[in-house]
Amino acid sequence: MADSFDCVIEVCGTPKVFPSGLRCLRPGGCYILVGLVHPQSQLEVTGQQLIRKCATVAGVHNYAAADLDRAVAYLERVCQDNTYPLQDLLSPAFALEQIQVAVDRSGDFYRALIRP
Image (cartoon, rainbow, N blue to C red):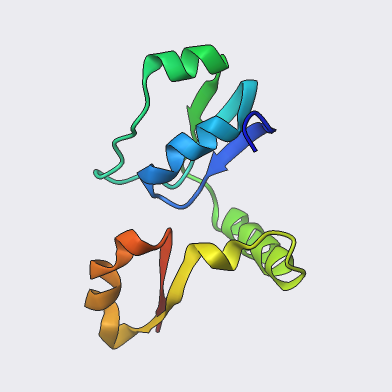
């Protein structure tokens, strides 16, 4: 998948995905960061990696609730038809009472699911 995509969009909030997203980006591509809005968002990247890719990196913030609605509808659609194996990125659903277990294991998954 190296050099395959014109644009990579990070939405999961996990810094460890940045290097693999950068590898997937075509030279001259754009990397959009959306989910890394927290203090533990330090990225493992060198200037050389960005320069050799001629990459544009941009952050996006302050999206509207309707944007989230469209994103969830998209995820429901592609998960149902198995277009992308997105479910492989998620933890099993933890009960709300198990939230500390989910937090403790959050490094094992790209996103921990909490069942309210």
